[in-house]
Length: 336
Image (tube, rainbow, N blue to C red; front, top):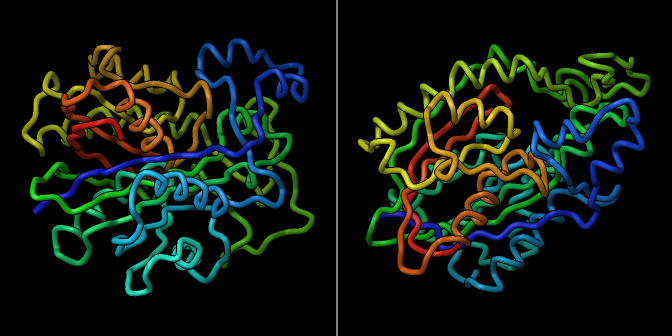
């Protein structure tokens, strides 16, 4: 008994925001240097009345143009941009897709490690006999949380949704997963106001941080240096642990796909791990950092280049908000 990825589809919002556009808003910042260092040229943001669920619906529709939805018996919906506090967005998605009502459906709140967590949950559901066809959806609209004067986050983050179909198979294509959590860093990437602990403030104070960035506690805050330090301290050794857990050597991995945080951070870790550039996926140019969607988007892009009838062993590592991280091995036998 095993699990296999049958397909992945993703969508961006229609609204494309280029570095040239941001340069008009922030004329004192050199976006050409930003593009070279961070690797982002364009990002996509939803319109005011558009939500993560709207993107999720489109990604699912795209997926089910190629695959049947009739046998889907579980929906896992990863987001930090829910439609409502309650009910569960996955339930609304079930109704939209007109999938059978005798299925499971739940949301889980994770960011950049969310897709890998979702894969492990899908594997557990399938291998325990509770499900045979799991729809794993990641959908994020961080643009709704960003302050208009927060140049750093507006430059990095984009909105997206990805839909992945994970199914039962007689062969196991998913390896072992490892996880990590450090809640002491919860405030390194956070939207403080608007939930139970701190209500939304209509007159929230503007706060300066970094180099001429502004946010309020109603908006997204990211302590970039601290997130970088966490990643540098934890993820290289964690990656080695994932490979050891799966009894696989570095040279046997065809491709390493990490959360696409930014090109500088990724290259820094690649060099520490001594991985060749052709075996380490980096592609943020069109889309930017789409949080839980970066890994499925990268998987889709990478497998589109695979030769027919040739399999690939891929190491996946997600890390970020929480602080949370997760990693695992997956084998892909065809274009997704």
